[in-house]
Image (tube, rainbow, N blue to C red):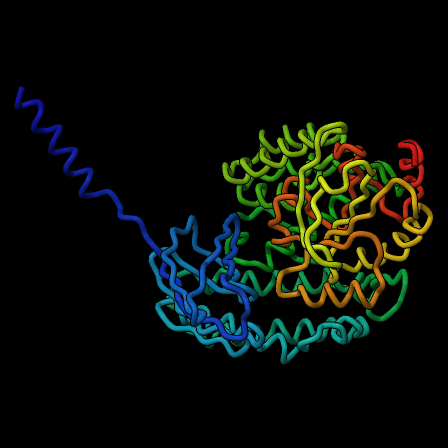
Length: 457
């Protein structure tokens, strides 16, 4: 028997000796001009919160799924498995950042690109997009030329980094060119502006490159914008200009399922399809099943499933998730305190433009139903640091109704339980705190008055 056991043990020992040890990336540094207790590191299919020490320093050992481009707070960085990077970061003045460690050459190069962009294109891109077509094209060409000069004079530690950057420079030119027509129309106030027939055509045709998607945030942004444009063009060709949500979803799903790279397909799912999992949407079931069938990231699938289950719990007649928030007038107000009245809830923030546009309409609706059996509740999801701004805003704008401040902004359980991914968001509850509509019409929508009338107000 021993003659059979010994070779097996030998193989086991050999296997353990030849197994490759995990490659960890050590990310450390210190952040100045920053008020928060943590920073967020984001990459393709990756997101992690890193806690800061009292002096705003940090260190974290990362198990990265891939090498590539990441964003730390507002700073683009490059990380590689098994390498280290130290960042001396100035949040308000990122051009003053300093890098050290084995990945310093790559990251100092990325910082130089930021400075070059500000030098050639300007810190505020408004004037850049106001340029007339010929001047704009010349400026893009100048920028690309200087980027290539910077790339060619820089020595890197990471093999293959330069080749990927050469492709990124081309993507950045296409990214700028792709935006010109819409941005020039807006900033130059030329409604309906169209570029000439001589305007450069985009060189980017491959929107399904897994490696480039991991490496370049510009490529990721360009893929998103061109995916959107391709959907719009395909829809218009098939159905014309009149918008139909279900038909448009069909176009998105067709193009989505053509994507072969798992990481690109996962990112597109999150960007373009996740929001269809929403209260009262007849498309929720279809979208959820497509996501589960086509997404490969198990964490992402788990998030979709969590949202799906929450949405199912928001059906008409079900009890509403509850709240107990600080009232602008003092003390706290809970949903239970409002029992006996219909409750119309506005989830908003002081920084949200569309929210502010609804305020005059909300005041009109409140005035129309003053003294009736309905309570108008506005819940701010402003960050805690903007608490004073919220207090002053409510006072200065003379906002009426019950004005509440959510205790943890977007992470507040009430907000998450309603699967709120965009604001303003409106909710209507009955006198017992049950859901009438988890996605109610806005005050500017005449359908709101119809809904209130249907419910006896």
